Amino acid sequence: MKRIVQFTVNGESVEVAVTPNRTLIQVLREDLGLTGTKHGCGLGDCGACTVIMDGVPVNSCLVLAVQARGRDIQTIEGLTGNGKLHPLQTAFIDKGAIQCGFCTPGMIVSAKALLDEDPRPTETEIRTAISGNLCRCTGYQKIVEAIATAAEAMSGKGVS
Amino acid sequence: MLLPEFEYHEPSTLEEALKLLSELGGNARVLAGGTDLLVRMKQKIEKPKHVISVARVPGLNEIIPRNGHAITIGAGTTAATLARNEVVRDRFLPLALAAGRLGAPMVRNRATIGGNLVNARPAADLPPACMVLDASLKLKSVSGERKVSVNEFFRGPGETVIEPNELLVSIHIETPPPWSGGSYIKLGARKTLEISMVNVATMLTLQSADGPILDARIALGAVAPTPVRAYAAEEMLVGAMPSEEWFQRAGEVGVGMCSPITDHRGTLEYRCMMIEVLTKRSLGLALERAKAWKP
Image (cartoon, rainbow over all chains, first blue to last red; front, side, top):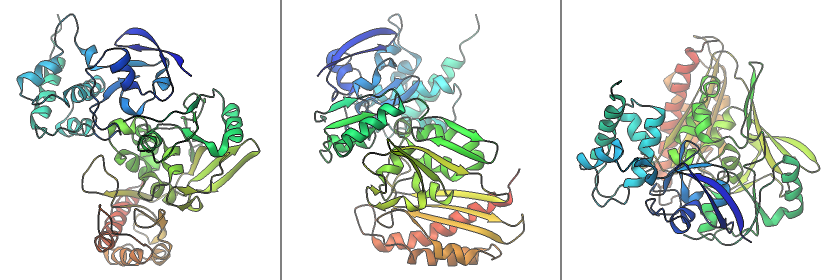
């Protein structure tokens, strides 16, 4: 039996009819067309499916859509504002932190969750924050540099 | 990966949840964080007809310090919350450390202490910490409630004394006495997203900063069908002046209390070697913290 579930995605309220066995990532990708979030392992081991739920990063492959009722979800699509890239996205591009790009949405979302809580992280804190996101291409170095660069750019935003 | 079909229940009170458990008992699984249950369902290891989510039951994820001498932790408290909580870090450090090593950041934001205990995997992170802290587990059902010591909770891999109609609702821990210190060490091939090859939690209580050992607790995981207390090693340390030699001996005795296996994570021989090394190392860390104890 389907249930009607209402939650907020990237600031917009959505309502979907789902069977209980559908996961949040399935609903985001298949029902809402938000395919930025990637399906990797489906078991919470790779982080490709990372979204921010009620302010904290979670594996959307292990959240039932029915459990998201009333919650606030942010996906990678929510980072772009007014057609402009988020400083994290710019930094990833500039620093060469993207190769195949499959881990990138999850990495950026984890990084955003980190910077939302701690605008001036140390390198260790950055590496810990992305320790649930696997990358098979880059060896992580450029990703860490990109996040550090973005942190500087974001906190250095001058007072007008 | 697809989940099989199931009937979903989302009780909004504890009474409702307990009633559902008593009616559906063996055909139902409790869903908290989902980082174990949903994985097992996707892997077709479990196929419950009913899933009872406790996410909306009020009060299950509260940490309540009690009068400075104890703490009650709701079973629905996430590992992330435990790792960060100031009271837990200050007075119940092995639990905060263990919670901080569980899985990875996203997993910690969902995984709960209740789930980690009831799932009873031999290599789980939180049981050894709870065991050296002598945690008391409150189990509730429609017929009433009972308290079980965490040291008597585990029966085998995936098996505990919990009945099908019972829910683990809270974990109660008394504050360790003055001059107590503890630690948690997790050994794995990686620092993250890892199931332990060997893990060890210890607590030491000294008579005074420079005094002999009044109480010692050592719990080991991933080296037996359940997490185990190394009681023989603990008894040996009581009354001794803390030293590397004593801790080395405790490690050697600890090996004898374990029955590790060889699997894809490590061999029996290596695990035995590591039990010795990590027990000694963990006791050393516990000693440092015991000596540095502040009221």
